[in-house]
Length: 457
Image (cartoon, rainbow, N blue to C red; front, side, top):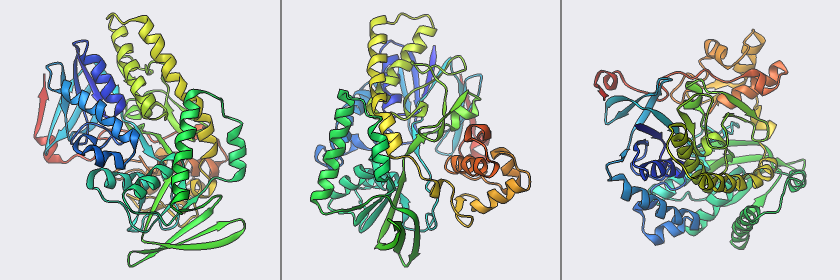
């Protein structure tokens, strides 16, 4: 039996470990040069002190990565590094590229552990040089030891605070945080709190980060809206509204973050059933408690099936592996399954609070007409609205009107903004608009790579 796992984050590593430890042959694909995913990126290559600068949770991830690396040399686990997976077919064929050459192989089952993507925050100036996502800045900190200087962070969500505190530890104090949540959001979110050990743990972590920012004198401005960025000579003037008044602040760099959503490119390309998550304002795959999808032999683990964080992703990786073994008629301890399902479910208790408190705002979900929403093809929000007025019914038709979603990212970042714009223009719910029809290649691939192709048997 041959199993493929796509993605070497906490979910992918745990799925691969669980299977390999049962002597099942596993091939794990990942775009990075080492295991860890985004959350534990580069952690095994840093010293304990360097890892600790980025937080306890990040440093703890080194244990899982080292455990995985120790088993990756065994005969049952193959880790293909720096691999760009650009096709997954319904008959379980995977095509990927490494070092300018492409390969394909058939598998008996596939576990998708593709993680989450940062939600796009299309505001005037978001495509300017020196403006990036908070996640991109975190990659720089983890891989290059570089923290942005004189940075202003804009948006909402736990990652905003995490990146800000990581910058503090690296000696680069943020100038300010411009946060979109309001006092009313806090009141609505409080109604979703359900006391539990997981909720208490998350709240303590959040309180600790906010305390560190306060002690360092980092200004936090909440309930901001209508943010615009003007950039000249690597300097940025940020204009925003708050309490009915307009304000501005200047920065050396600008970091944006509006939450995260599942990476559904591969699951959409496979034609798996998806549902609209009204709380997190995004599409996500339909999966059962163990990660089974609408198609046999395809499983989903981690944030790619619904955003719950790294700890939950580890449990879902185990569950997907257990489900796969059960479906193949292999013995799995029923008590272990029940315990892992219960343990995984605990992490949902905080989700309602976070989704309500940090819900995306209409002023950037439905941006002004002249704001670019598709960076690859430089399509503006106004172009999308004009296309709807001309008869465009959904995201797929929009490609013919504007090439929106046809660039290098294949709609990964503009997809949900397009859904929101079309839904608003047509006075429909987002779930009635649908999503892009994703086709291979999922990632850019050259003709040379296809010409230099090997089929692995």
